[in-house]
Length: 246
Image 1 (cartoon, rainbow, N blue to C red):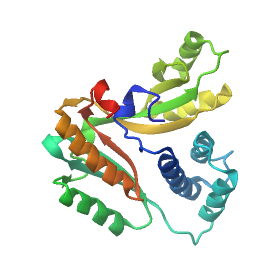
Image 2 (cartoon, rainbow, N blue to C red):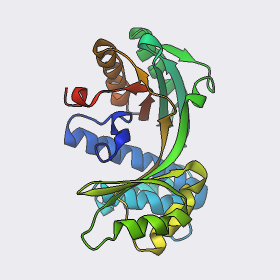
Image 3 (cartoon, rainbow, N blue to C red):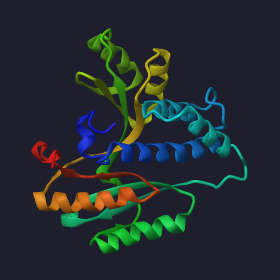
Image 4 (cartoon, rainbow, N blue to C red):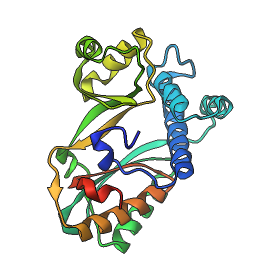
């Protein structure tokens, strides 16, 4: 969903389209494993799985690929997936919040520590930087000509809408963390399908740093995102618009 909303600068996208798609598929399939383990393989009775199926459609994942993952996750002998988070300081005190899904805790922890050590970062105690970010629901919806944007915005307030952004192609909706499920239900009731719907960590305050620092931090983020277990990396840098293209 990067590029469709003002937080696209916070949640870093992959450079190449095929690499981005591959990473999206991998992340969704890992989340499917957790969703099925927690709520079963029937999407009608498992809202989390139902949402992941929508996200899979949004990034053009083949149905067979998704179904194989659901079937495998439903096998009691399948590997257990763990949800992990890491909080780090890098250049000039910039905070990174890293989310990962892994079937091997030791491997993932060792990989993140190694990346920090090699790039001058510091792995902090979990919980020490979480207060710098707020979890919000972020929904990206393809914009259709027949949509009455103002009317839709008013209706979605009942589902917890805090803010809506619109451009020529997409609507981006923001909700509080606790209203994420309410918005999912409301959009389903209205027959509106999302290209993506997820919880993101939005920085409460953006820090201004020089261009050299931005480049160094983005290099570290790129390395982290190349790790197979890392699903999301958030930071609290302010990136000027004229720097995005670079």
